[in-house]
Image 1 (tube, rainbow, N blue to C red):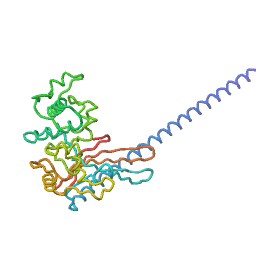
Image 2 (image 1 turned 180 degrees about the horizontal axis):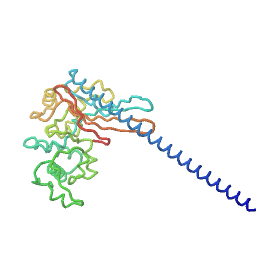
Image 3 (image 1 turned 30 degrees about the vertical axis):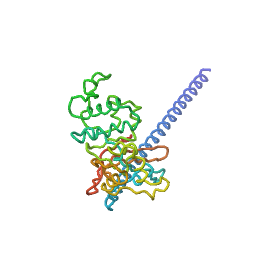
Image 4 (image 1 turned 30 degrees about the horizontal axis):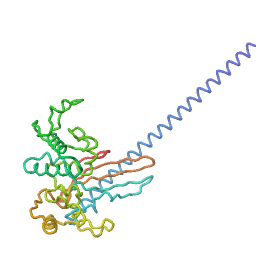
Length: 322
């Protein structure tokens, strides 16, 4: 009987050892599969980032080539939202598009001074009005933004300086410098998420306090915010872009002088100042996205192209919208 009991205990011990070994083996296999998947994801991420980087380099070369072939003006036909290009790659695809960034209002222009500030303030106020924002609120939004950008602590009439922001929860100070992203508007007095959504298609952030508006790419709201062009936006776009269904009939303005003559002769605007306007763009936003398997990696790149020598420069990049 004693021998049978000892055999039973030995059998149970052997079964326990086998069970533990099986559990350990299954656990090791699971960890191995997890490590393999994690390594695959890392490799795909690196590969996607490399594809995006190559797309940016290619886009910069296209921008340079466009200027070098003596194209002295830029249009939405070239750099509109519809120009998404898709390139197949092993295991997925790369998509990219280049968007003009000077058909919108550069809010950093409100950090300028003198006559430039007066002109830009008026344009921005009219743009807010075009978007259905009443005058009182528009004055607050404009003055608060000027106070946020300027280097002093003197508040504009309807604005706010550091004393206002120190009273917020949590407290913070004004930037007193140029913005780098539209998202920074959320910190400025009066800029609610709803107002930012209203303006997101009309405003941009460029690393300049004196950028000009490209009349070939400006929207209806942007055009009608320019002094002297109130109520003329639809006609300008119709004459400039032609029939949307037949893009070959567009007639962009090849030179600023052509636009000035058009305004005076066709629109019958006798007193028109073209300061702050141009027919070409120097700042562009390139959106690139690489899809490999089930993963998708996006990249937003701000690119500057010098008008005089066509040299391009990467200003900044982000994995979320600029």
